[in-house]
Image (tube, each protein chain N blue to C red):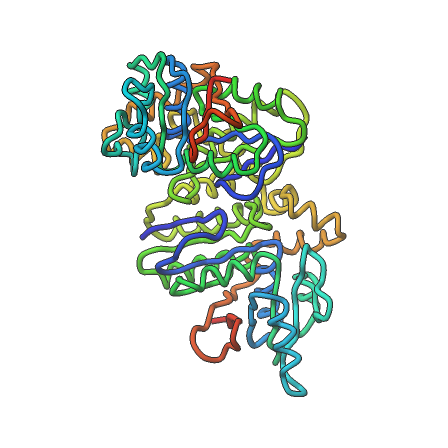
Length: 243
Length: 243
């Protein structure tokens, strides 16, 4: 079995892909499901999200969550804040998500990957177990990064997952995995790593430090957002459920 | 001053770019100059290199060096081997280079960067000094990687340069630089790091372990291949001299 870490999304994926955008898309995605959401629809653009809600009949289950540059998108119901989501009840709702990096990474992964999961530090144990149980030839951990630049927080989280996976069995690892493991083993505890990242500092400056603290919680959830292929997802969206 | 490390080539560069392909293009480039070559012409494709020599008059100074997948290119005079180059005399010669990753990274950097240098472990001190003396706003260290995948050996070398640069002055660093510094500080000595990389292992399997050992030599040269902009370079080539 191969274990591969892409420090940014690229290339093609033959088997399992685990998409990581710790600050904050995949952390928020886990939280929406944890707080009762039926499903998540990840859209490629904000416009697809807005059109989806505007075209839906009265009483539709859609709520829109997302950000650009860390700030809420006009017309959306929620920012991309896991701390905010943790205080809400999403029972019976479908959250339509669009974010700067994470949703794009999921779409890149879904173009070729067979099984797509979303992972964060908050569901790290469960995501590693799910990936291991599903994969037949390769687990690719894909870091979303920030505006096409590598994100320390994603590489650190990839290293956390890689540590767990190596505990579960033998893998041949690539240089991305070696780098992620080195960063995880020497980058301090999760809050230190996230707080020292460029994006963590950016969020703190925006007054969103609570999200950074929330995202640093290790394995606080056992839910793994899982792509449901085929019907059921409106065009231009990827549908994830708790699997 | 900003210090940025791109773990793979991407984006645009406003100021100084230091291109790293430790195994083996930039290590070999330094060696060609160290062994007397007047200049290096980095071509975008092997065909440009072959056409350049075939179109040159009798007694032209062109020698062709390069590889694909680690192996010599048919029709070329040399592989991409620093150990081989170290035993030759290139006085009065211009080496036309084409390699799988390094020459492409240099072309990417040259599209926007103002000052382009080639760096390896073998000229690390000199390359860091040259970058520091030249930059006015940003030093971008660009890792060539291997076939669009991040290479541990390049990230390690970027961390070595970043360490030297931080000794010379204050920088704001990005997450790529943070990751490279972590890998350098925790990745063992240069030979250990290079030998544990996927590409280092590939070269050893090809019987090119001597090149890995050569490339792990720290600051054995003070020459820094420097892009000479403007005239003098045939179309489709970048001309580097010892600066």
